[in-house]
Image: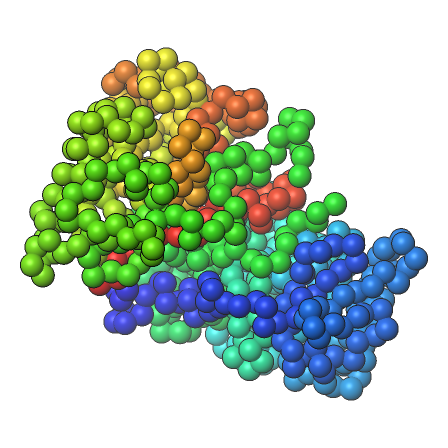
Length: 311
Length: 311
């Protein structure tokens, strides 16, 4: 449904990221299975399954389209045993530079969200295995005499992904051994120089955005979970770039943020975080947005992988 | 996953209301189809389709399991033509007292949410036709020196549904010709005597809760949309019962509300509204609730009926 800024709509911004049809046939993909757990934790493209230099602990079955991590630890599914299988495989893939999306580089550890045993693998490879990636985004806002304003960073021109684009105030992937809140506290310092004590006391957990995205380059399907947080800043606290990932911070009005969204200036998944913020703060309402219910449901897309251990 | 109050969990409270399995086979039900629109707007039990005294404008096809409202207005799908078909049918059902859930009574008009033409039918019959019902809930809270507290009403002992149970501060079904906000403004006066001017200025739209519920008595499946609103009250504004639907208002702490939820004292769908409130206000967090992501997705269940017109 067209409304703001010509033919663009908030729903179209959501659909550009949550771009896998509801009736997508997952049976065309391979299920990634962990020991003693019948639930698929990822869905992999056949082409990636073919190419992956699986270590001996993985059993690939082309008939059932499954990649089963076998119990390689004699009944004890220890963290070490489970992870070493992934590490051996991933190390080989990186050494042989098999996947363009990994850039031949090692990256920080992500956990498999619903795994019964703490299981982790490298961030850049998450989309190859089709596991759910965890991110955390903090929106910092200020109630000014001119209305609510939001601190928006412009990403550094030297970043590998989405250089020069606009972003959520503070955002990052949640490392395997961090909680979403710990991620935000660390990134608020590293990316925005926000005072740790203030962030610790005033950051509010406000929900999640979930979506299922099909990459343009690889057509791999990646479930994403973004934990969203808000923080209200006094006008006296101003975010300042620190670690080189951010070029500058701008304090934008809601209309300025909307304009930038519809002009395509935001990193695409940040549009979803902004829309969620707008819905929670009475900016997008049932009265001004025909797609209100549809957008709300899309922002919490039911993921095809578990997010809670079954044991 | 068990946690608070013994074996009860927030997720179990959600699942008690959003109680239709994700893999439910809708082909066992009849689709309710409107003129020139292939999208089903409701799913009806075969036993209800059998019993309904359909007027001539409806065509029931047992092979395709559809109930098609025919164009009875010669190409112009006018409001009058469309609605009169439902009214004739519903009047007959009420006159003959065919359905226990309707209590042989007429009720206010609900609209079919995603219908291309403005189409309405009586509230008590919404679950018979399986259309999405629209509700609106307002949570009034106070930031006291003793922490955040919530105004919780106890329903009148004389109410037909859920007498004596706890409820959201202000709640009601959204009448066909009202918006959710208009519903809240009216109900805030009628149920809680809140000053209209204050409510108009300070009520914030904060999202929706959607769920799919299967009634115990009839086993009919009803999609529900609850538009949720917040209002922060100063300690000086105290809600007072007015129209006889509320017995009393109590200002409860978050822990008192949680306790009442786990003891089963709330009208069941209000638990979902409270859980949504807790998630938006940093009370339920990713750190204190293992089912966080699962609960968030369940509170925005994708409904099987459209919520936006297709024309």
